[in-house]
Image 1 (spheres, rainbow, N blue to C red):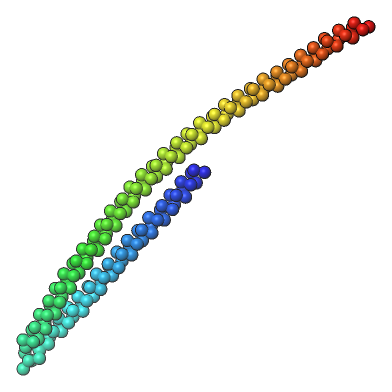
Image 2 (tube, rainbow, N blue to C red):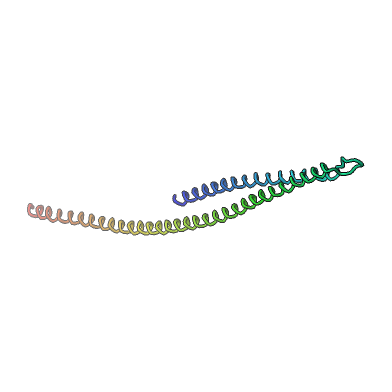
Length: 176
């Protein structure tokens, strides 16, 4: 009975760990998606930068100060996006490190709980063996007492019959 309860608790514990792990995985996936969106933005801005380099709105197809400023502004946005990507990637790596730490912590905790369950089961099995031995000894003792009781009962019956015969056997001899 204790063994079944232990298994039930262990299975419940495993499912609760998977739920926490799935929540962390969901946060990781959201963060990964955010980084991918930033990379897409960077690619789009880089395309805009290439177009701005080709733009020549000046006289005789030359670049104007405004064209060059637009290119510089787009390049500045690319650098800012890159910085943002680095920060978000660091958060993503922190999630991974936290996930590894959590998994190793859970594994160690599971190992210690399993060892505790094994020790408890071993103690319960030893206790059960001890109780089974005591029951066997008590059954043997009980059968000895029962045999002794039956023997005493037979002895009392025999003595009662003998005394009855002796008492009534004398009376019947004296009457004749």
